[in-house]
Length: 140
Image 1: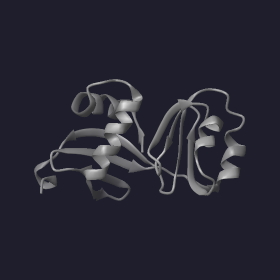
Image 2: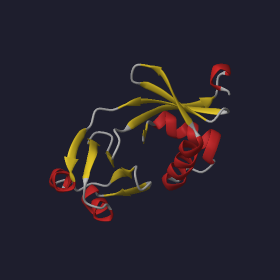
Image 3: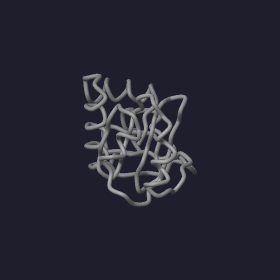
Image 4: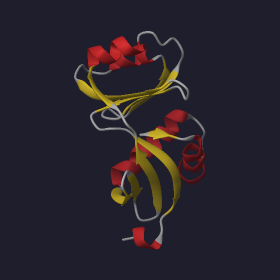
C-alpha cells in the first residue's frame, strides 16, 4: 500500500494524529487488518471498517525474484519510502539496504523514482487516494 500526499494528510487527520511516517503506516496496517474490501468499479477498491473508508486503486507492477529486484535498485543512492507489505515493514532508506531485511523469494515490485517510493510484496500494490468517513452503503 502506497500513499498519496492527500491520503497521508487524511490519515493523520482522522486516524493517527502524528506525522511520523512509521506511525502512519502502523495505523494503516492496523486499519487494514480489521477492514473489509469492496470493489467500487474496475480497479478502484474501498477498504472499510464501517466507520472510515480508505479508497484505493491498483498499480501496475512486475513480478521479479529477489535477486532481480536487488539488481534493479542497486544503482539508487537516494533514500526512498520503502514498503514491504507481507512483513508490514516500512522504512525511509536506500532500497538496496531495505532489501537486506527481506527474505529471498519472488515478489511484486514497484518503484517510482519521481515520488521516491519503493514497494515489494506478494500482492500487487494499492495506491491510497483518500481516507474518508464511510458512506451509508458501506456501513454494515
